[in-house]
Length: 287
Image (cartoon, rainbow, N blue to C red):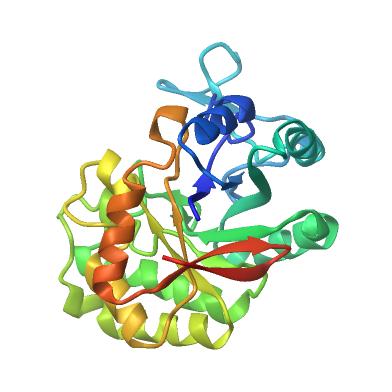
């Protein structure tokens, strides 16, 4: 089974790729299944229904939409309507799944619970990510300011632990060590984060959830996979088996990037299956 279970379209604030372009590229590459997981980041972004959307570009937040990105979550009615159109158009050539990527923080849990009450039946798959904490983003460096490397790394994993203990509406924990991508001091030693990762994975596994191997690590030039081989091996050693592979592609040229290499690495660790989802039900496929 060839699939990509983490990709973005024009409904994510940071992507201009149309669903059509992503799907046609997937068919060209021989994918059998793909899942759109466009961004929802409560705390730093509004829903379109809230109105008064701000627009951000290279010079910061402005009022002109020209060359700027909306600080808005997925437009849910339009998103699900288009996904169903895409299924109707392309369904005989590729399986298309409905997903979302929840960029969560502890104080935003009620908003995601409300979102699932409204649209949960529309979804096959939910990725849980952490893109910011205390409404401070990683990519800008705001979250790291005033903290040592150990402090901001442990604070990141503490937030993750609290989230998996408190929120159960996700299916897979995305790019577990994402903080590494933005760490100005370089990767922290695995021994410093292994104890808290062990706690996180015990909870993830007990709840029947999974993690992903995110292949964007090759695109961003990281020195290891994301999560790292150490993190993947820990998850496997603790009994973790549910695992998806996603490219995190925001453009068609990165769709399914390095998927075969990712599979090779997973087999080397000892994984024998990867998973797809149908209405939140995990389906195993031979790796």
